[in-house]
Amino acid sequence: MDNLTKEQRHKNMQNIKSKDTKIEVQLRKALWAKGYRYRKNDKKLPGKPDIVLGKYKIVIFCDSEFFHGKDWEVLKPRLEKGTNPEYWVKKRIIVEEMMKLIKN
Image (cartoon, rainbow, N blue to C red; front, top):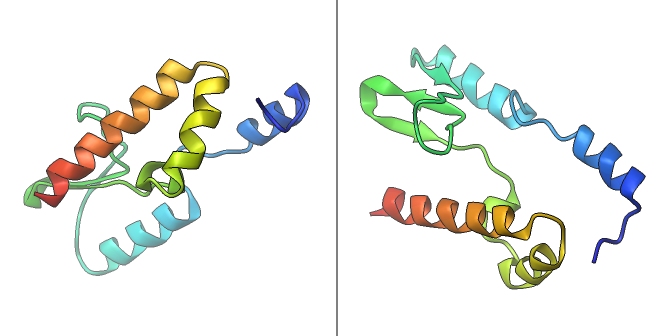
């Protein structure tokens, strides 16, 4: 199950940012400096991408290892045992499918 107490997990989750992460801000500043204009966290698009370059029909997700599948075989069983496993496993599968579409 979980290696942390409920209070420790709550504190960790509370400190996780979903918007304006360091890497996101750095990337946006670099894009802006190069003259690219974008939208942030567009709710109209699937997955609510972090950066949307509408003119070029490009979306950018600034995601962690979870979404890139690092150690997925280790992480999946832990997610399945945790709270709300359907949500997390489904979310990872959706992201995996989106990544396949992007690569093709």
